[in-house]
Image (tube, rainbow, N blue to C red; front, side, top):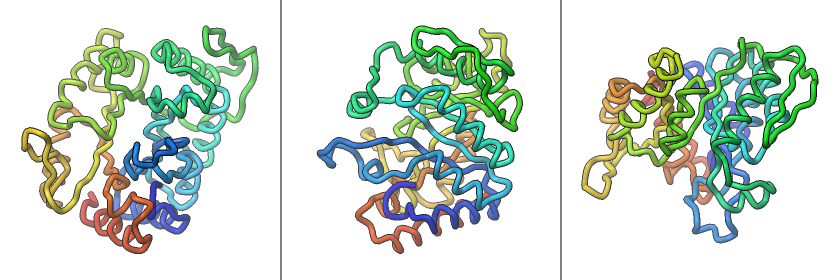
Length: 297
């Protein structure tokens, strides 16, 4: 959904191919705009389709595969509007949707959305609670510091009961605990140090247990940046997980499962030969197709 390969033909084609090849899920991400200085962010962020519209397009071209967004930055949308969009997409996809929520990080997007990064933790709690009353209750109502929903009805309700799974992102300890406590799971970010992900998973699971939940029931979804071909290394010289040969990437996927990861999705947008808007589209498509087939489950 980013850069040169994000064409209508490719969104439909890769949805169909991933469905046919046995992949478990398709994922999108959220970026509203980027700073005028295009060198300020990686190329992956410079040209990005809307995540939910892209998933709707993919839903129409697939039948089995689940559809997820990692993540919607909730400070930039209202819960009543997002609840309507998610319920609609869940209905139209036959109950295949997963919703990831994040607190946002880019200054320009906060300014353009007319919101503030302050008290994002409390805002997240209210946002999830507001979504749930809109999805679950015949008459919905909410009165918080950030959001107010007068007694109202919103229909249709989602196909999934009691609602589509809500997954929370974040890397601060408070965010990890929040995911374990109030959500169905936690989503990692693209910059996560996968070699130490077990430490973050432990915090999520401990918070879930303290909230009276089965820690093993909490999903851990990793956004895996794939660097297929040459190995990539961190500052210490260690090979980055999900880099190197396809055999190495498959071994890393299995290793992540041993660390407590329940689901891994391969993010090809970070491959400079795929997700950059400066690459020739046919070349980007061929590169993505190669990786899709080579890593098929």
